[in-house]
Image (tube, rainbow, N blue to C red; front, side, top):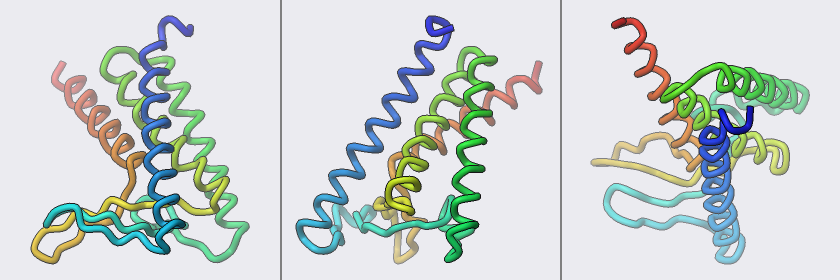
Length: 156
């Protein structure tokens, strides 16, 4: 089983490590200098915000019971995705692995910080996209791969 899923586990590990390292660097910078508000170029800023919801701040709850329930639901979904990764092959396996790696990074933050640090702020002409993190990049890429795989299946 490990040999068959080796590349999937490598993708999960890479996504998780890149996410953790980036968040630790950003949080440490913010703790050292008080706030993170850095413009890297006209389109990219680093601004640390703490997201207590899920994607794009949706489902933010003040009630801890709802927050904990949502966290357990996310862990359950990760387990289902892991099972699907074991049953898949090729590009689809990599898509699942990418989503799992990013999700593990974000759920780790939910457990240890009770929120997820987001810090990548893309903007153009005053329009700012939702602030996100490295884990979100892996989740989005993984979902895009899975959608592509579904379209390829439909063609056959």
